[in-house]
Length: 494
Image 1 (tube, rainbow, N blue to C red):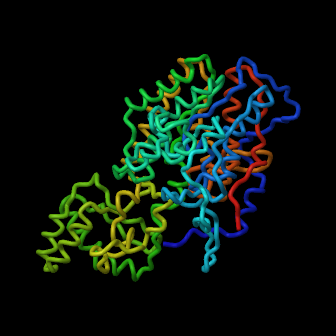
Image 2: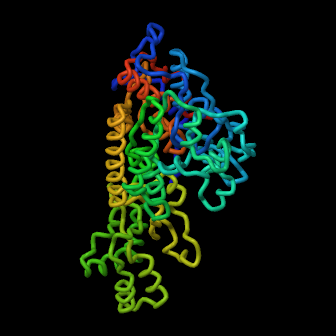
Image 3: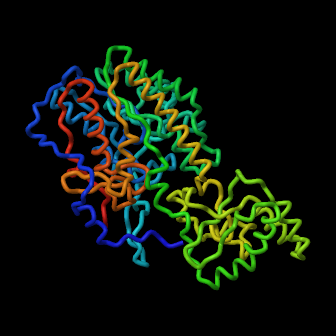
């Protein structure tokens, strides 16, 4: 598998002017700022990593400084908004060594001239020690939180880290070991709130390849949690803004690695077909499954993967190979390895993290030549691929959750941000434009997504901040000025 190669001149792409949708044409200096029907004197933001300012696979100082709630609070302060504190990390590495959280990703050039994301060097100074004495904090975004986690008592208990009932980020700034994110938010008597939660209720399933280790939250639980959050947040008269969930399958984490990145010359294809795929295809064809394997050309070939939705034909393959005179050990191995194997199609999504696995050897005793290259002659594991069926499950859940969010917003008269539509705009090849700078979801050079392919850059968070501002102004007749997206940071090149 080739490494991600990004020419140094790619950074200049961000400076070109393109013909695309313009999203920033406001002269902020000419805006007469007003609160309208809202009261921004105590603004509190609830959510997950997207609210915290997480990016490059870590939470670090520069990312927090450019969180979208911080941008909102700055604009609100022009209209009487109060102090906005964030539970700042200790450094710009972002790792928390005590709980195994690594440093942020940075771009680095390897010996072969390839440019790609690698963990930043150095030892992070962050701990899970409580910093609540300097609070309370108005940015209550907790990386990794799902909808129901915000209501969970003890989510900030250090003792709960060993049982998986607590979150190290909330441990840092929770008021006590029994508090919940919601109770700590309500203790501040917010006059205005933002709520962007639910991504992790589907994202964890998607990024783990739908392998079952991180299931999608049930519709009933999500509805109960989300409506409970909105009901409580509005119970003291606060107004607010909520956002729906973007289609996570459209983010760079799932759109960067192609389904067919395996370059093989004609001799290699011929050899593999003779040794592996030719005999297997004949056997599978006898069971009406001949289309599973299709390594037929020397062009970039599709990845080989395990699809648990397929009928497991391990026994049939083994029996047929034995009848062909294949030694029992090899026949059994091939049956086990290829019983649910197929080549990928364009409907399958390959996670960004799988790029480091393709072409490597599976763990012994499975790594037996020629069945010793993940994605080429050995199927990628379930966790390495989001199949088309699993993708449909993610999309269906996202649609259901977004209906719940919109209904809750309408029932309480809250401002609503259609983050899903904004993501669709970014995902188009034309992207969106801010003062002559084009933004898309293209990994690294698109300007809006950070090096983890999931979270936004400072500029990406600026795009989101403006969507919140537009919705707030429309709903509450306020006139908060939009932020200048281009003043924030994008991907940093070495």
